[in-house]
Amino acid sequence: MAIYGTALLSLCLLAGLIAGRLLGMLLGLDSNVGGVGIAMLLLIWGSERLRRLGKFPPASEQGVLFWSSIYIPVTVAMAASQNVRAAVQGGGIAIAAGVLSVAACFLLVPVVSRIGKPGPPRTTHPESSTP
Amino acid sequence: MSQALEKLLADYALVTAFALVGGLMVLSYFISGKFTGRRIHGSAIAIFLGLVLAYLGGVATEGDHGLADIPALAGIGLMGGAMIRDLAIVSTAMGVSWRELREAGPGGLVALLLGVAISFFIGAVIGYLGGYRDAVSLATIGGGAATYIVGPVTGTALGASSEVIALSVAAGLVKSVLVMTATPFVARRIGLDNPRSAMVFGGLLGTTSGVAGGLAATDPKLVPYGAMTATFYTGIGCLVGPSIVYFVLRALV
Image: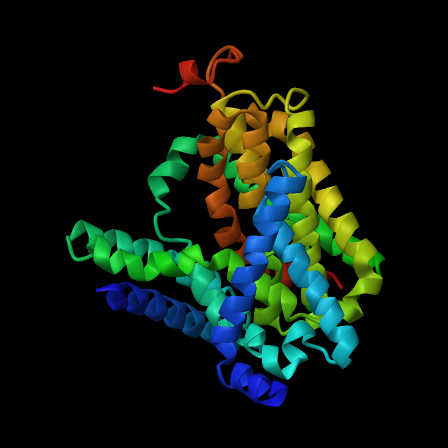
């Protein structure tokens, strides 16, 4: 049943948020330290484990897949409910941050591509370099 | 009559939001196909339109919650609020497997960590130069320079203002659109012509829609390789943003 998947997803989110909250308290902060990230790790681990036990059929998976399929529309709703009126004057910050991070990462592609490269430079045939 | 309709829409706030956002998605994909030849993905146009509507809503109501301050459209705030947003974000982790990351090799892992770190760093420096001096805002803007999801998740966890969260969404959107459109033009220069560099590319840039769109316009065969590493990016960003990055920034400013 789809609710099993949604329930698993919800439990992972709650557990992650609780862990993040506890971590925040331990560190003396009034914030949630990495809760969503922890929840994602829990879901990867939990769903993989259940699947291996044969306890996570496609019907249950649907209960998670629905939420991931409306992830962009939810992001759109999030964007539509922010205080953009106040943010507009800082628009230059958004553009500069976006443009510069893209430029820096583009420049790093050839540098990092060299890491762990076995032997001579690769040719331009993508098929030939995969098994 | 209009009062009765407004009450109905307000009573069924979340349903109204689903219908409205659905309509917005239709419009966005139409614009994407008709005017950009799908070069700019419909999702990016939809988020842009969301920001525009939030601005218009803010101007109309003088409120702080964009479109959600219009009573009949309050459901937008619920649909895009932390609860449903976090549920949707976490759900995208399913299907990710560590085996894929291992296949990407050391280059893929270095690309991911470096990509997340550099985006946070650049975003925080720009935010600082733009006048923001608190670690919470800087981490949020830095998160936005990572992706339009990492920024808001970091901001919500740390208690950033809606204004700063809006900035981080906009920064992530600029990044995503730029990666979609500029990748084919720089591909040859940065050696983006094989699976290995595509995996590195996905890990460094991280914005899933941008990476998929940019690689599709460059060479569709490279898309799965870029997507393989990019899927990890948002998760790592959400994990380190409101933790390690915030601590480092707090120690610095």
